Amino acid sequence: MVGEYLLSKERKQASLRLCNVSSFMTELLELSAENPSLHVVIIPGNPGVVQFYKHFVEGVYEMLDGCASVTGNCGFAYKLQQLATFHKLKRYLHVFLDECALNWDSNRLFSLQDQIDHKVAFINQEIQNTEIPIFLVGHSIGSHMSLEVFRSLPERVKYCVGLYPFLSSNKESVAQKVIEKISMSSILCSAISCIVSALGLLPRRLTRFLVKRSVGKSWSTASVEALCGHLLQYHTMRNILFLAKTEFEKFAQEPDWIFMKEKQDQISFLFGIDDHWGPLTMFEEISKKVPNVALSIEKEGHTHSFSCTEAGSVWLADHVVSVIKHQLQVKADRVKDTMVG
Image (tube, rainbow, N blue to C red; front, side):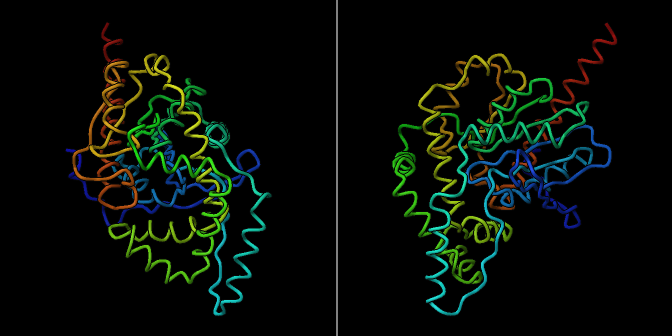
């Protein structure tokens, strides 16, 4: 039953790998099977830091008994750097100002469409065995990206799972209204990014302490380290806000109900009870307009940021694997019926 699985302490650990995709360095978190029968590609939500999904990737791999390769794909190219601890305020200020000045104009910002194109290019480049079926697992805005990748690669993608899907703007969400206003202002985006960058200059032990005492009280160690090591950078925060801006611009339109209806037997969504990114009003709208899409609601008390906790990662991994195994069984039954017929 979903939710009762416990990961073994001796489980295989996911490894990080850098690869060049479309001239951009991309960080992958992966576990490769020797003779995989399928490939699970996980597309993160914004901010796209794949290290947040460490326990989730390992859970999916273990629960599929090592018969599938599992890859978490980084959302965008952020700076892979570690800042040294500084002992003098003067040096803090000097590096902080240099960081802001360096990133003000020169670094590439990645739009929602850029992210989608990047995922398509990644699959074409890195998963060249076309005989292996691909199962896409998208989280939050990654659910929308997964649908678009599915649209671009219909012969390769066999199924698409959306977790806490962000598919349309929620006009009732105050948080979304605030984020949208900030993301639309280049001045506010730059100011916030500089503030975040300044926090990133603090000693790692201090930022770790602050995270654990605030947003990361229940987070796993891997997630705390991911935030401290990757999010507290100017360019990363600018990309987070720019991606949010293009998300809201895209979601001024209705979801593509026609495409969902065409692929409704190959799509499933999991919603949360109190999730403003994927509200239950969207659950209801999908159930009306695309009635054959597999829909479910998570009632175990996990949150939109499920991958930041080990319990949430394990529960969602169990859910995803249940969906995958069901689809594989459906396919096997169809083959059997064909042979009998």
